[in-house]
Length: 452
Image (cartoon, rainbow, N blue to C red):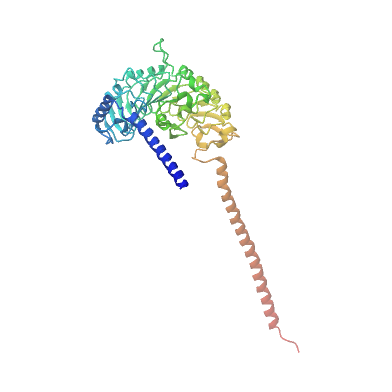
């Protein structure tokens, strides 16, 4: 009986505890979901009506907007602070209400069929920290009102049809870490940014700058690289330096797609400690500025497919964290600086199709680079410098020797067989001749008359 009472008390305590937990859960979620502002709900529905198609079936007037797909609300106030509509087959244009009626902190609409211009009516109280409009068909100019978003950290407009000059006016945003403009129709020079001496357009906090596959031209701005202060410091400024205090880490970090080691790669986490510059596939000319050598925390540098001249500067040897260096398809001349041997983290190097001469440095990571890293430079040679860099893909001098060795062995084997056949044949002829002679002599003896 006593044990029954004890078990009953334990059961009642567990039941009470479970009720408390359920009540707390419901109260928290009701507090978060029950305060979806009517104005924001109306704005989102207006946004939906502006799209010609899209997977937004849960966006219904009779339901709370905080439980709609792609919508994130602040847990304490219920205010809509995040919108992720990536890869939802959305077509149409971006309604102006999206950027002026809702105080979003995260806006991600990548991978859809959006067209037209980015709305210029961006709220003066803009709180956006992430804007990802990548992989659409957006065109015209980048709206100047985007400068209202002084908390902006990531701006990814890659793979669209935007036609504009370089948005130097974004450089006064002290929080901007990632700027991706790749694969658009931008043109003109990139810097210097001293358009207004009262404003500092330095881009001092940039971690990633990707302007590849455009029509930018002119000489590379030496002073611009000198302003990238965030790329000159160690990795101590890592994730804590760029924490966006939103719903969950996977949500606020977003996606970052870059070209690294000749392949596209997508980074979702740790982009805050990643440092990359990609100026490839443009119309840049002139020499490589020595100020690049100050970017000691840079990990990826790609300036391939341009019209750069001059030498491969030895200052690149100061980029101690560099993992990928691509200077291919230019008109660089002179020797490969020995300083590159000391880049201990360098995993990918491409200096092909320039006008480089002299011997390829020996040591460090250079032992691991294939001949394709240097092909197309008629004046380059391997040590000792009596052998030019082979032009055949994925082939080295040592492999040529290895390929000839089996042929030599086959020749010796055939020669040995022929020699053996010849020697054996000669012995056989001697034996046959001797047998025939002996046989004739016996016959002669058998024919002689027997005396007496």
